[in-house]
Length: 188
Image 1: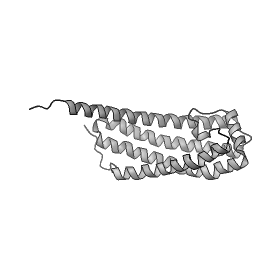
Image 2: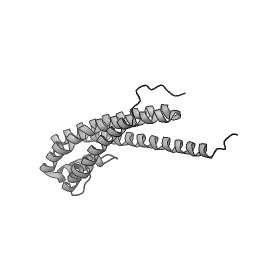
Image 3: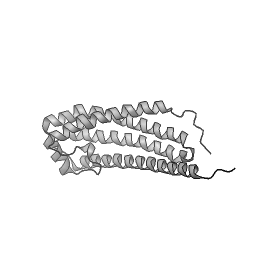
Image 4: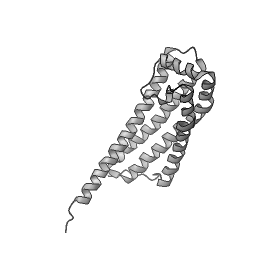
């Protein structure tokens, strides 16, 4: 039985939030993160290390980008990455809830998945907080600080992966059901 959802988001609302999130993400990937990777000589930045990093990596990255790169990270990349987590969490929360309204049989799992999107945004904010501290504290990075930042990065990456795996599995299950309904003989 479908769960009553009087305030289900419209498709247009979902598209608006998704476009806003995609715009900020594109700015980061194509401009600020690309510039930081260029400044680092090809070393990926913290945001692009889904499996985490250690103190040696953090020190190497922050040394490679230099003072100018650390300022760029702090004043160009971080401001965008303070907007993006809210946009990600909101847009993907709305997407999962919109899908829950369309795919009634998957409502419960999609509603839980919507909460995972919010958790991704929270983990991204925590990651950003620790990155700011590393930028501030360089060259005196404590292992505890780098480990905390790395754990936040791992958490963000893991939750993002869970969100998209569930979404893909739900869409595949729905597609299989749809195909079998089309092939089922009609009575009459």
